[in-house]
Length: 241
Image 1 (tube, rainbow, N blue to C red):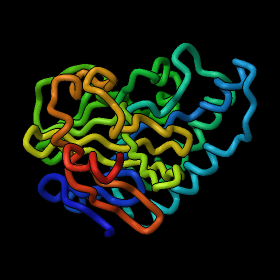
Image 2: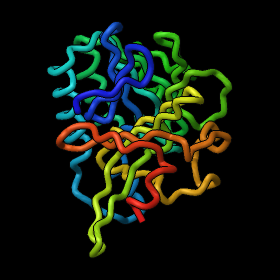
Image 3: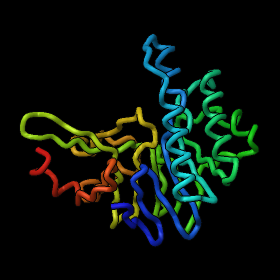
Image 4: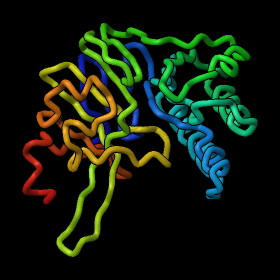
């Protein structure tokens, strides 16, 4: 499946993001650029592939959807405390791609301390929240009462296990239809995220979800073959366990 409607003219698409045709707009969350650099500071060395993977994904998105607006729904950067040199270089490369032919909107996440020091070079303000098509957009690390709302922050995923213990973990959208809440999967290939099939109500990071009936969330998994609607979380127990 190539798209699933979440709100009026607002669609989940397989590339871990939301597309709004009427506004020619893409919304993506949780890039976490600089994650490898942060790990290296802790003595953990992994191949530096995330930024190139994100750049390739963005170029594919721009080619496929030709958006006029691109909204990053928080946590563009990873390091809380500083802008490391490599992180600044990588984020600048991402913004250079996006601002070439697209209006870019940056929404602040809890990891985005000092992001303004980088975004100001591109004359991009950083918003706490933003509204489009009557929907509020926030990162999700703070509680708000506005509905409908689209958030990131949680990095939702689903783990599918077979009878011999092999498993596949897929990023997924969470759609709390009755409460007007949509949670985006992380755009970062390194952010596996919260396995919502095993999470308790107290284990969610977002205060928006802590006060919601998450068991009624409809899950939409993202895969190489497209979107996979899985139904409500509350109905998946027998399938998953």
